[in-house]
Amino acid sequence: MADQSSTPAAAGASTPTPAPADAVVNPKLLIPKKDGPLAEVGRLVAEAWGKETWFLLRWKTQAAFAQLATDFGAAITDKRSAAAARTPQSQRLQELDDQFDEGLRILKKYINEDSDYSKEKTDARLPGFGLVARKRGGFALSNDRDERLKALREMLLPAVAAAPFAGRDYGSKFWQTRFDEYKDLLGKTGGLAGQVSKSVSQKDTAKLELRKVLQAVVYALKANFPDTFEAELRAWGFRKESY
Image 1 (cartoon, rainbow, N blue to C red):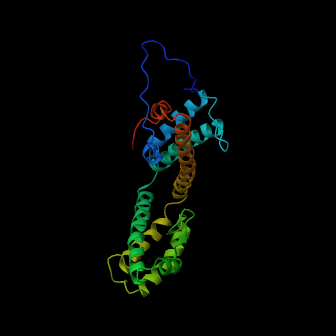
Image 2 (image 1 turned 30 degrees about the vertical axis):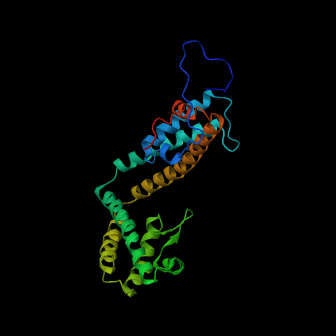
Image 3 (image 1 turned 180 degrees about the horizontal axis):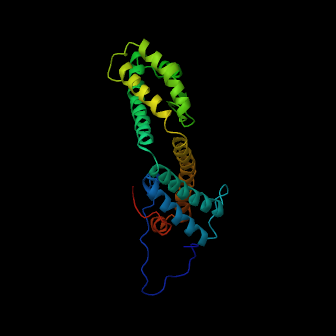
């Protein structure tokens, strides 16, 4: 696995079946989306990379990647530990956060419809509903719960109430009832909710970088082993064709 020398195969040894010359590698199918399987693939790739001293990425060393994989695994553990310690109130806060996210998905459709299906007009209106632009694109409420509460109270609720879709399923009633409960619960949960949010933030940051490196590894292995890259991918820890 360390090189592609031209040494003849030993008698009786099986010869790997070359991959089709035009075979396409799709990292999205090889790299798990779920945290647990992703952490496992990251660990396996870090171990394989440590044995293959010839393999090089100019922007990420094996040691740095191994630490990244370790940090991601630790972040998952921290998140699970914090979640396990949640009070019922904290669990309900998370449920409301999830409902807000789902409600935003529908609310954006309302705004888009009211903007004559113009993305430009829709995007221009979204900040007026308390939504902030994401680095990866799109708009959402702040992840910080205090900022989220403020945006709901001062911007989203008044904007929805003044909109022509205020009476629809995801209009004023949907947001007001959840805001009232959210405000009450947020005052009771103390610092634990912030601990969970911090763990999630750390995990998400590590996850993005981990996936970025794994994608580069997939492409580099195909470049170095054009005829047998599928076997190499399996040897490096990419055990499944899709997740």
